[in-house]
Structures are given as C-alpha cells and as structure tokens.
Amino acid sequence: MMRVLYFAWVREAVGIGQEDVTPPAEVATVAGLIDWLAGRSDGHARAFADRGRLRCAVDQAFVALDAPIAGAREIAIFPPVTGG
Image (cartoon, rainbow, N blue to C red; front, side, top):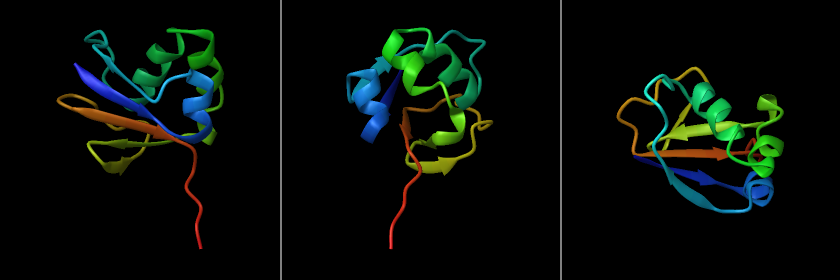
C-alpha cells in the first residue's frame, strides 16, 4: 500500500487530499499510477487529463513521470511549482 497526496487544483478536482491505494502489480511507474488512478472517479479523470500540467514526487523526491514506484511509501501529485 502507498499513500497518494494531492495538492492545489489536483486536490480540488479529485475531491480529497490523500488516499491509500494498492495499485495492481503491473503499475510500475508514476505515469502508470496516474493512468490507474484516473479510472477511480470522474474527479480523478479530470485531474489527470493533462499530464503536462502535473509534477510528482516519490517519497519526497521530485521525479519524472517515468520514474518507478516499486517500494514507494508516498507519491505526491501537484501542479508545477512557481516561486520567486
């Protein structure tokens, strides 16, 4: 099981801030997880419709969408971070 955290408009679209999930064994990457999560609800599907608007972290380390998730405890999904 892993915890998935949602932030900003991703959280608003999904409707929750976090959930604990156990994806099937064939879900091996962040992108695969996003595809699988998109099927959980209409809100998930809306939040994940445009992957170009998403950033992710695995166990608090920023990663690309093709990063593996094996052994991950926490996946965070959020919009691009801006600052200055």
